[in-house]
Image 1: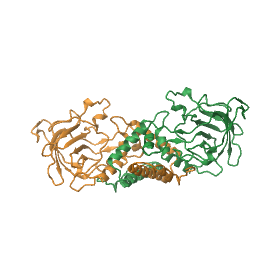
Image 2 (image 1 turned 90 degrees about the vertical axis):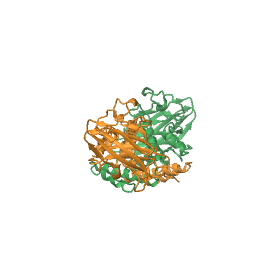
Image 3 (image 1 turned 90 degrees about the horizontal axis):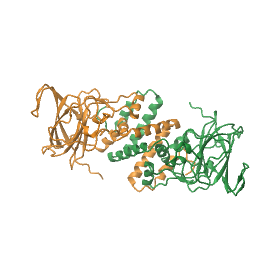
Image 4 (image 1 turned 180 degrees about the vertical axis):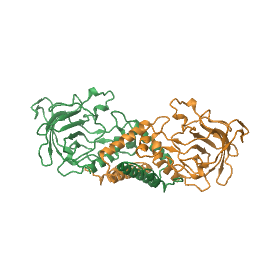
Length: 292
Length: 292
């Protein structure tokens, strides 16, 4: 293995991975090597361009911290995340579609009870979410865990506030739906927002004249043993960015009907002195996927 | 662009880059998107595997600092660096071959004069390097800049010492060769060494049962207006790792003849009280590459 050139080096590198004990690791690494080499050959990548790539990846890693995941953002903005999601969750027409997880979830959000408000003063118009979780036959799925997170009406997740700390979590919570799979909670109606543009991914979007906007949405992650975990959004209907989501995540079946109401008695019996919205949404879980 | 699935998402992502002003940036990004997506489809990458990849890339970026470049190390160990080098420097049979730059060069090394010692007490056996720079016709190339860097006989570059600072640079220097293209300097004979294995790249090598060794070598970077800059190594002959260099950089034409001598008068006239080595090596520069 001396004197490798651009034509024979790929096979030599793949051969070097021949002793990899785990066959799946070997399959993934050698496929990645072949595709990355093919990219470099196809573009006849120069050394200066290669160095720009090294710098970009380094800066992307160094932008990451406990509450910022720039590599997920990169994967999202080049459609890799949605591709991986799509190919792992081919579902029946009845089941709710999966979409990207995104970089803003945090572990161990506050546990809340049915009917509680998760907005805690965040800017935006109040919205009562009335949800139910059912199976593909329409039968309620009792007692699922429902994890919710979203941006405020100004487009910011709590973690984007530079003074944020874990005592100030808002617009995120984990609930248990009831025996009928039902759950309601108060929040605010989200708005479209830009993904963070102060890092390498933002520079990439600027360089390619792409907008950074995502249509407004609430994230839901619903788990129940025996069902495929559902990670999805409920998007705002009529949002101007539904057809050009910066992360390619919009599913028509996941667009919610956010209905505006004047002040009065809300469906949960509470008195509202200001206008508010309701969102009624039914999540349909698919059966657990049995992997080979 | 809603409801993208694993089959149609790639074209949708490429279309989103349609307005990229710089045609080369557009070509590179869209080629990379197509190849990365093809990789994810070919392996049917799962979400858990995707997340392992995100974590690996993040850790690789976070391992980088002023004197450690883990992404270059990654590129080197998967043969991408040598591929890029090879396809940008196809040279005549006469010219010295190019090899990888590696992650251990630093900007602005100490300027030294002909005949000086760059080892400054580094462990290893003394070695007098006697070099000349010529063109493809064998004619001396006068007054080139010659940048040299290498590991010591224990396998460490100065920057790998945790207490290293810029006042302690050794085994690296920049010289000007003379009017005949000639340059001699003292150093130590380098030895085979492992690339750094305390980061994500080391974990990758362990997981795939690859050894981290590079055959011993001295790095040379030679510049002169009118010639293609030469970045190469002079490898130790008979090194056990010449056929399995962890970064795929060995060229047969770049293996030097390090000759051992007993104590006595060295070719530069100095008296040696211990055995020492000499390396005589002629570098042949190729003409400058004119890019379209």
